[in-house]
Image 1 (spheres, helix red, strand yellow):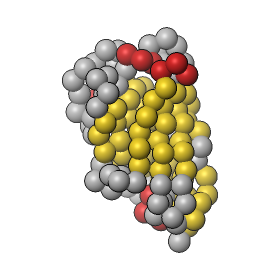
Image 2 (cartoon, one colour; image 1 turned 120 degrees about the vertical axis):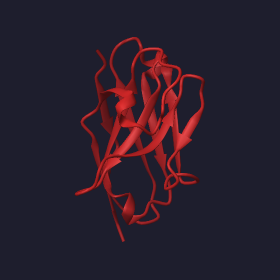
Image 3 (spheres, helix red, strand yellow; image 1 turned 90 degrees about the vertical axis):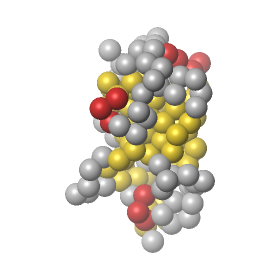
Image 4 (tube, helix red, strand yellow; image 1 turned 180 degrees about the vertical axis):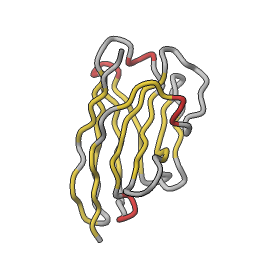
Length: 126
């Protein structure tokens, strides 16, 4: 069992930056692929960024060039650095963890992830 807790959300203006954190419980964090998703009101949950066990990173087109996913296995924490934020980035952001040692997964498919956090709200004003 893995518990995930997101933090770092808030209200910012367009063009500002935020860094989201996702703290994971347990001892298996380093052996799990991780991802960030978001959900805006009235919309489906969508992929933002993912990081595989081999170190590969994957981004939605909307995030490329602005967002950076990273992880610190010593701290059991994953991050999402978000720069040049836009009003359309407004959403609840969720972190997700895949099943243990899953090397191959479709990073942008939420069904590939076994554990989810409760989310943190990001609001970007224009």
